[in-house]
Length: 394
Image (cartoon, rainbow, N blue to C red; front, side, top):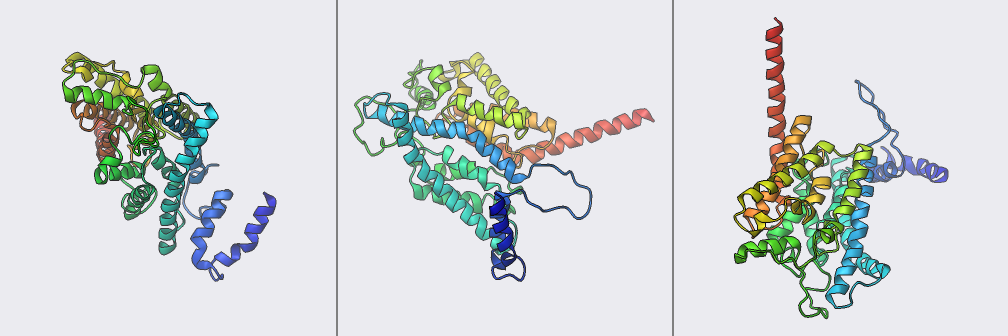
């Protein structure tokens, strides 16, 4: 590492003001600060000095996403071989197949997103924002495995340009960029992110699929029962244990609640994510499920409340999307309210709108817009309480 440090110090003057490549200073700075802790220091005012910077925070989140990503690769192969009648193939066979399917999506996401980030930084003469280190991984994980690569590129460009850069870049965006990418594909190219065939590699092309195989997700099974007026849900993808482990069709990184909880443990242990938001999202979803159990108007409302927490993208959204510190509430009380309403709305949308079985995306995007309002009223309530306390003291 010392040799690499010396090499960077040697070429650094070429990228500074007056150097041959000064126009590429933002690009050079991005690579230097990625490899080594930045030597930037504050010159005035009082600041909190810490040993961790934004790049390190983003890298911890990427590490926390690894269990969901690696399991998603394995599950991609598992579901494919089940679909063609090969049964449960060996672990490494499934994993290798999934790796070859998922890796291109990740590459496209990072190449397009970081390319736009670098160009934007060069035009503005700013430092390259680090936020896309996480968004670039989140985008593939919330996509179906058979999504066309050009569609991923367009959605990523939309998320970065419209979702981030127009607001000023990392730390200024209102909506979660990864969810914007998914929302873009859902509303612009609906057939490519809904239905029973898009969750399993090769199913859309009919690559030797065995008769009777269903690629429906548990959410689709529940929604189908409501749409057809059935009094009982026919689960085609096992039961709660299968849903918790994640050996079911679904988005690449959203199927395994177990892998997601491992990532949650990493985020909580390192202090990167807010436990208040995570806890309140799960609490809101569970209590909303209990309320529907009391109403019991259809088969979907009758399912055990905890089912909602382990199917679809609920757990993934609660751990990795709702906890985004930029787009969520900033006050401690506001985090409880923000998370609770996300959980409530996610289950509400699922059950009352079976035409759109996954409500987590819409609930988080809606609460992203409402988060500043929540914080405003929390702060105002604190001010009124302190004013009353001051008057009583007089």
